[in-house]
Image (tube, rainbow, N blue to C red; front, side, top):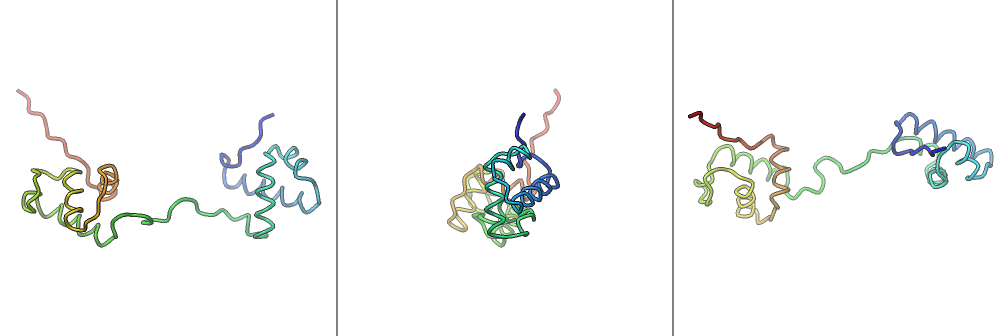
Length: 143
């Protein structure tokens, strides 16, 4: 029989399994027996056990995963707003940049000139998407 992967089940199911593990640990049942009984891995039982010893009943609460909003960005929120304003109000040639339209490379060059921050075009794509600025393709004329 296949073991239950706790990362792939719902939050409620994970919480129920954690409660069951904790109850069995309180009854002094061995980790291997708990793993066999609940069809989870021995490693999962050990992890739940160690977290329970450290945090007590707080281990049942789900913790937020991943980065916090705005964390680890190269541009500050003020710099982002300034760049957005410039892109909307001006053309690259008005700022003496050698571009006719705003491209990812043009925006990267603007950031480098204005703030001295080097941003890759891949990261600039993410910034532009986050700002709601998508590429505009020219319409094809019918002949």
